[in-house]
Image 1 (cartoon, rainbow, N blue to C red):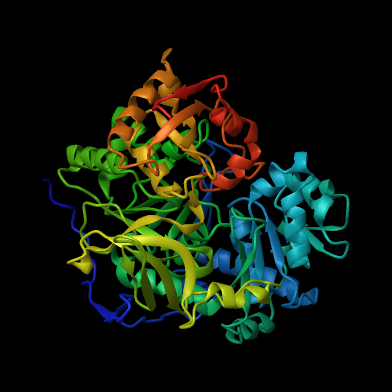
Image 2: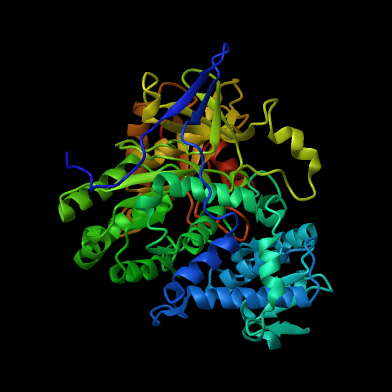
Length: 600
């Protein structure tokens, strides 16, 4: 096996508490070390130390030249926004709601609001751009929940949504004021507001335990909740990542990312670049057909030390790397570390990437993951030790992980540390439910050790408790595990699947074939039937075996909340929206298009 390209990590050094009931508590012995107390302080430091360095860059349109701003320019514009909010009398009780995609202006609004002591609430651009058919239901719900004093909507595309949901007294900031049909402030004018001494005073006086952001959950089990983030949480999370991954992650070097800043993973990287001095290229692409070409174009141009994506993005990247020599050369030229998040990475995708890396460089490239939740600021566990196995890693400094024994070798995962939220906006009723008697946050996931005799090999994800259901026989089905194993075994023909069977006799799936399965006149049903038969051959019982499947011809619908910004499938929403498809799966005789792959 090829050696890994050299990368520096601290040694794994965990204190392990063993409790009489089998519970384990894992805590890194290395204490968390904080450099910058708040994001505005970190940005000010970088502007003072290397003001002329490019901080943010974006393409105004696909293929257009990069437009960039330096740290000094970013800081000056953020201070201008802070002063504008101070002049308007915006108080901490009502946030700035950001209804836009990733952009330089989005970052400036976030840092400006934080500097003024006003919370921000970034909302998925899909809520506005894809929500018209439902009357902007989700965006309206969020607006009523957070009651924004200011709404930032970068351009005219967001005008219909803002008009539909904005509180009557909310101030709108935009680059297209004429499109909003109300008194709106031009962003380009706002960032020219002369900043006075009050801005520096506000930044110095930031209460690190006050809400600084409301980050929305995905709403997979209901309507989204607004998770309170404080500067203490954000700083702890950024610095624990810096402490174990910083020498390899390139947050002080060059980054290129598409992950939405309305989600914690995207927000983490952009703020890490701000406080640790990185140049952040905003990638306009996404791991979706027709959009990933933009990512490939950018990766062919910009060599990176660190790259992050979701598993679906790595699968598409592997396809591109296999056929594009220029991309392979640029992508692997400096690369030291790759990170995946949002879902488990299929082992075949991991193996393909490593095979390509070895062919191009003679080395494997270290691949890690960030594991956490909106409630833990972002990823607070990672793989910071050499491993050939995908997993969720071990806790980083400042975090304690409690593992409650379940069935077999599985544990329920719980977390405690400064990066864990104090709660949800307007939902004090949930306080007791999200924490246990020791103050550990119940994340709702399960995990198992790669090697129970060597904890330092890390943990593997073993499913979400919320995705487990019972068949009508009382047999438990670990839906997340079934989905992950199907995607692994059915590669390269299966893109994703909806796992069905709750209170029904057996497991069946609704399948989205991969683009490769649909190409060149192939028969995706036949290809999947063969792979699912192979999957079933390795199953131990009815809790895993797939009896029937049907192919879905329409893609996951983001407007109906079937797919998150990161590309993961909301299983509950997909089953609910596709009730007729579920019914034909279990009909007797089987409905049209249903393939029977195991006898009843």
